[in-house]
Length: 43
Image (tube, rainbow, N blue to C red; front, side, top):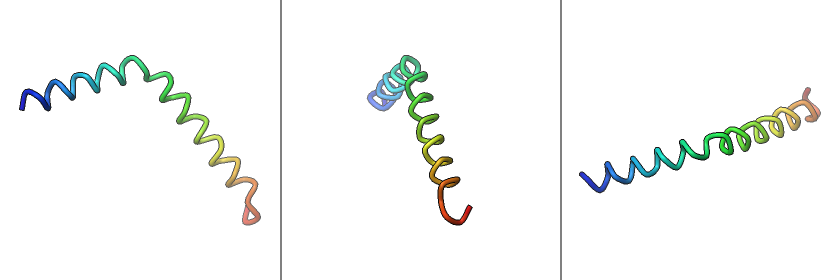
C-alpha cells in the first residue's frame, strides 16, 4: 500500500510540474480535431 501511495505522490508531482505542457498538447489536439471536423466534406 505504501508503494502505491508513493507512486501516486510521484505521479501527482510530475503532473504538477508539467501541467502547462499537458494543456498545450491538449489544445493542439483539440485544434487539429476541430480543423479536421470543419474540413471534412460533411460539414
